[in-house]
Length: 166
Image (tube, rainbow, N blue to C red):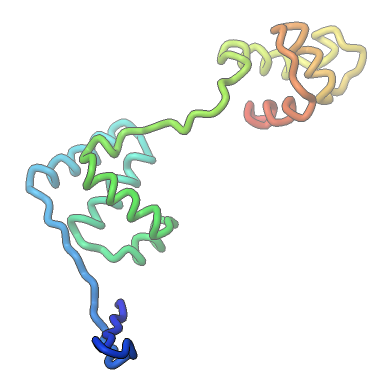
């Protein structure tokens, strides 16, 4: 509910206060609703959790008129996120459901090199020619340099290993 304040014309003092509910429903065409449901089925078939969540939220929000507070609690999303999804859908239609990667720095090692690194780390330091039987970030840094010609910071090696499942 929003509160409107009415000012008098002459002396600009508050004269009256009223509660006015703000409720806007945006009707969708049958074709749009049908497209949303078909996109949801596509998401289920391709096991795309992100698309399932976003499409389900939009169906609940725009077709079934579930309140934003309920959807936010159910899905763990902020009202700002839900309104942004709604706005994007109303402006761009089904194209707003497409994934837009956030970008970021390109990975230094390729997928093949990552798989090879996992094999080498699992084999152990003695197999790859180290003098110790225990890995540490500096040894793995040297291994990456020797095998792939890429120089990592030792802290970045820890992040890389974590991302690889170690």
